[in-house]
Length: 118
Image 1 (cartoon, rainbow, N blue to C red):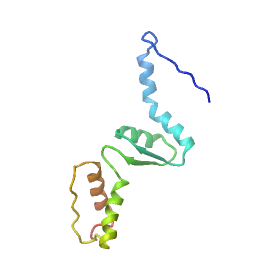
Image 2: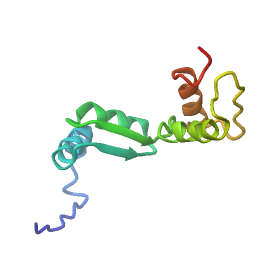
Image 3: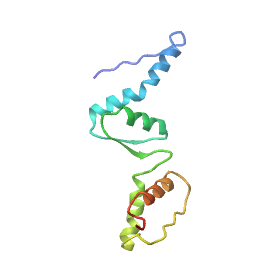
Image 4: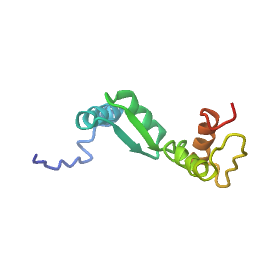
């Protein structure tokens, strides 16, 4: 599909129009990606982008990495010691590292799963 560039000069700049377009950006991106994929996996540095895409997409959106969460890393981080030790039930799990998206996701996984003692 051919494309051609369009350059906007200072005299052509319409701030109100640009603001309206940006407000619709998540909706338009979600609609476009939803047409091409059965699932959208997103690594982003912006929680709002993730939320906007999930809100407007017609296919599932998976958080692959965001500033607050790293949910795909958490199960892997728990599965490795579980395979080595047989089970994590009744054991103390210690995380040594930055208090970041990985730490938050590990904690959420431990609290909301069967990794914890019944």
